[in-house]
Amino acid sequence: MLNQSTSLDLMFQALADPTRRIMVERLSQGPASVSELAKPLTMSLPAVVQHLQILETSGLVRSEKIGRVRTVTIEPGALQRVEQWVNDRRMLWERRLDRLGAYLAQSTDEPGQEGPA
Amino acid sequence: MLNQSTSLDLMFQALADPTRRIMVERLSQGPASVSELAKPLTMSLPAVVQHLQILETSGLVRSEKIGRVRTVTIEPGALQRVEQWVNDRRMLWERRLDRLGAYLAQSTDEPGQEGPA
DNA sequence: TGATTGGTTAAGCATTCACTTAAGTATCAG
DNA sequence: CTGATACTTAAGTGAATGCTTAACCAATCA
Image (cartoon, rainbow over all chains, first blue to last red; front, top):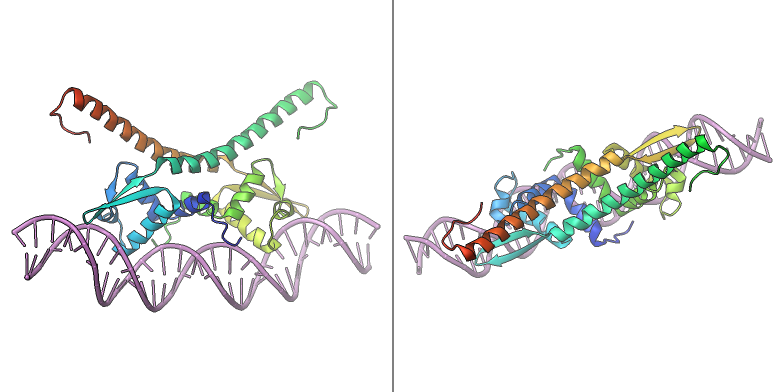
């Protein structure tokens, strides 16, 4: 699929990398500077900044530079949209299972009915 | 980061692709065969099967071949783990905001206190 | 039996990704 | 002003990703 790149797309893509999830985990405990985020990681600073840019363009994170320090903050609304997408699919599936269960229970009582959608 | 590849990693990676999310959306409404999944997509069958393999090795999906038809089913537990990860981070952040709010409300009443963690 | 349907295997290719190093540019501290 | 700190920019590289086509296999059907 040739780059439809919805915002949801960018968010899932951002979260697909373990380094970036580590950053999100750190940021969920409060804002941090670029070098604070880099500290636990075993890669060069530019690499860290590249990851940060991906997180930022996905909307998962926001950042502001004051003096020479860039402070990064999580964007809870974005996380919520990801969560919502996953939840919606799971709920759909479970609703279907419920319907199916109801049908099976009912069809043993009253056989000869049509199956559910 | 040189391929730590946790299962969560594989799941996020699987969901990062729009084609695969379309498949998950379809599957959340009930099981489907490979060619049913392929129908709305504008790519070759092998490409579809490759996406399917990625979904399956991530654990998001299960499949079984009967006769010549492979039927694919969603794995709700896997979806739930993804959902949980996102939810945990968001909750952490919101708990932090609450603490901060409480501190600010209190510090205007009783100034001169220490800040929260 | 021979064609069709449904899927699989293999190989190749262009693009994107996750890094790297090297060389900057501001800001702040002494 | 001088040096250190905190990034930033640019360019390059090897590996992974998302496709493709071609050929194949194995159930089902006329």
